Length: 438
Ligand SMILES: Cc1cc2nc3c(=O)[nH]c(=O)nc-3n(C[C@H](O)[C@H](O)[C@H](O)COP(=O)(O)O)c2cc1C
Ligand code: SF4
Image (cartoon, protein in one colour):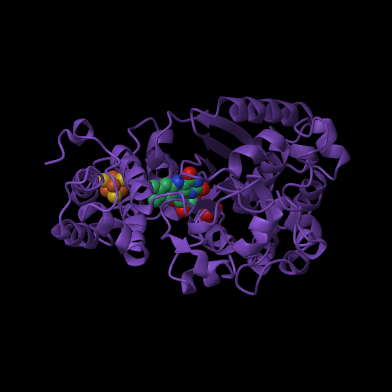
């Protein structure tokens, strides 16, 4: 493991992660000692519209993958419409490689609860939900405990801190389906239906939960709110880049010495992140990586200096996504990695639309054939043609995301495919694993 240079270490900007290492960081007492709920007191004295404007001014963009401007989203909620409004926090975190929301909820659940209260006050919601993935039992327990503590201290419930504002917060555990992270499928699931995406428009801002105006935001987005309220929009913008403001929690996994979460200003590069993580594992050289989970096109060692913000990654031909950098080395096979991701998308496809349901089914079979040493050159055209029929033609982003690693691995690593097809690489799958592949 190599030690990061002081100038690289200085790039760490612990904001959302600043309490994570404090003893009992998840308890309300610790949270209050470390600035906790101070932002709420300040927010409750402000007009809700001013809070929406503050979030707009900060340039905060959604941390759930698409980077939609948060203040703009809040501003879409119609006011004075006489309908109940809802805030729903997306805590599903199912994107392969992504691990920023779960540690946040485990280590510092009150920052999310405080963000929920402020955001609900801003959009005039009296009921909020945190939809958390079913398998995340430990984080859900921590969250439920934090919610109870917040009720006991008068931060939730009726007449919060004497402000006249009421809010109830429910932590709802899903059953563990990747598609339930898609915001409209999440709303269906929350209403008790099978989680499948809804047709848009109408959008959740007007017809969301129970056909009422709803904001759906990621955990990291909402947990950023108290810091912006306390520190101000200008302070927030001192971190990050012009169009991608603030700090970001980057999760690093794979062939690096010290995997985990590193919070840095947006725009840091993978070269710097790897240095922060103690370098690559001994004997491994970087070959390919995902900038934001498996739904984002692969990048290579040529892209080590790409700024990891929304614009920088897009200019390099990929997507910032969930900032889940999965790092693969010269000892890893891009064909096999892509196959494993496709198995995931095939398994998680909700089946509602044909391109994703059938396309992923068939692509898995083509990959099995290639990896068993029985692929043909035409298989590569079939893969690209199938991706062409999925991308932009699927009902939701799951289908689009499934094609990312296929097209990008064919772009950068076609030789690896040819090596299987032309017999230079030994098959990775046996004939037995080919069942159903033809
Ligand atoms: C298949 C799929 C899975 C998704 N999973 C998540 C998720 O686990 N968490 C999340 O915040 N957003 C997820 N999203 C994005 C959400 O639909 C939505 O854009 C996001 O919750 C909005 O929050 P933000 O504006 O704060 O980023 C997913 C999208 C798709 C298409
Ligand atoms: S793209 Fe896939 S997950 Fe999305 S609606 Fe279609 S079948 Fe379901």
